[in-house]
Length: 116
Length: 109
Image (tube, rainbow over all chains, first blue to last red; front, side):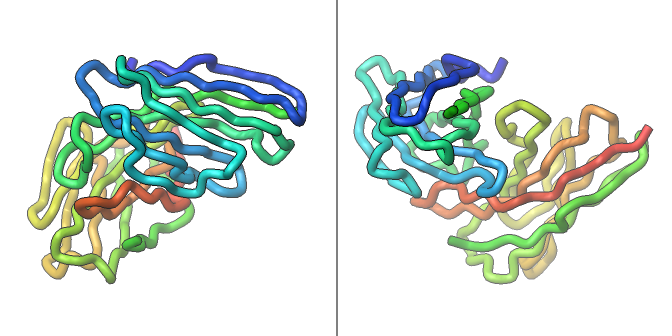
């Protein structure tokens, strides 16, 4: 157990629907990161939050949004789902705002989203 | 983003050492070298990181070339559990991790 908790582990939904993925960071970590991993794209950085505020944006679609709550858990909202959104979605956390000089990220075990 | 180049795949026999190479010819002086691995059906996990000097921990060793344009992750005795995708990542202050395709390591019994 890495200490980063993601729920649900699996999600199957239909095209056009909206889903919410949840992430609880490791105790004491202030930064939360979301990554998408599909077969043809590898691990793609989506967005980072630090202590409730958005800090960095990657390849996140406009149909996707995220937030980090006062208790530091984060939610990734995916709407108007398409078949191509089927992927593994990983959440990671770190203690600091930037991680280059320390141990980096701790990843959760992911949520597997299947859009049918 | 700083770029790294790794072989797509490598094979090793169980209980033998494994040397996973990574080229990063455009590395800057403040870039850290991180290695992560991703076991099947799991999220990536930290393996080791360094800046200029070689590093050792309980999982692996990291050998960094003197000019820092390449590095090698060394698994001293591969086990079946080490079969994974290994990612070499450069990270600088203010930048998030960018994962490339990595090296898929197969360990043969």
